Length: 386
Image (cartoon, rainbow, N blue to C red; front, side, top):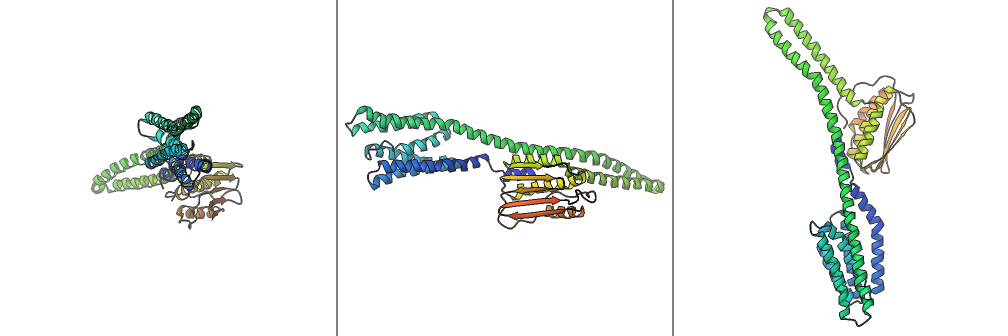
């Protein structure tokens, strides 16, 4: 299992969470305001239909903006709302028809690839010019027409568009931070791999060189001094056996970092994946039990990143065990978790119990040692979490 790949696959972008928040907070408000304006100004059903089309186009633009692809619907939404505004001014006798155009324009203009300032100025000028055309069909008070159809619509449109420029920059910063967190997680994994590769080279590089020399010597001695050749081969056998043992110890040492280090590593990986983490630690854990609990925590962390869509994780550590609970568990039957199955046997061999439960979208992994620690020191682990 590649933790970096799991993080990148699992991590829910902050933009997605902001999208849901924006829709929850602002979509009802936009619908309510639009419905009230249509109900107030429409005198016939067909006027309500046209004004409602402008509101609907604004809602479409908003939802696509929240999803990050507003430009895909920009042209049709702009055409609809740009047509509704002169209809509102010249036919429906309504100064509120700019509502849809101001919303669509404020979401579209800041996301244009270029000429954004010119587009913003053109949008405001269009709203003001269409509003001023009201003077062609009315002989009413000039100042009243200018205020209701020109100054207010153009001013509100300018404010909406102006506010969306820093908003776009804010979303850009969120995306940059998200990318930086993923890169940090990737670098942490790469640094650990480089460290392990260096240690492995230190153990095996010298040994292989010595083995090569001794085998070459034994080949030359096999006929002239068979006794010494046999002694050289015995030394080669002992050296290889010792190197195998050191390699296993190195692999095990990588797997059995102390529990505090595993807690910090799990916390960093979850946070890099955008998952909220809460750690409750009552007391220190027996060193031998801590090795097993650290392995349980590492395997569970890998499984959460790989199989769940978690938004939050809680880790409870007591003197006798550990419990990890996450949300986002799939409703489908849980896939086979071979790593936890192997750890269940090891925990049982140490006098403990490993519990795995899935219920109501939550997943619990708990390892407990009723007597405070394993009966024997844990055996070495071969392989990696799956």
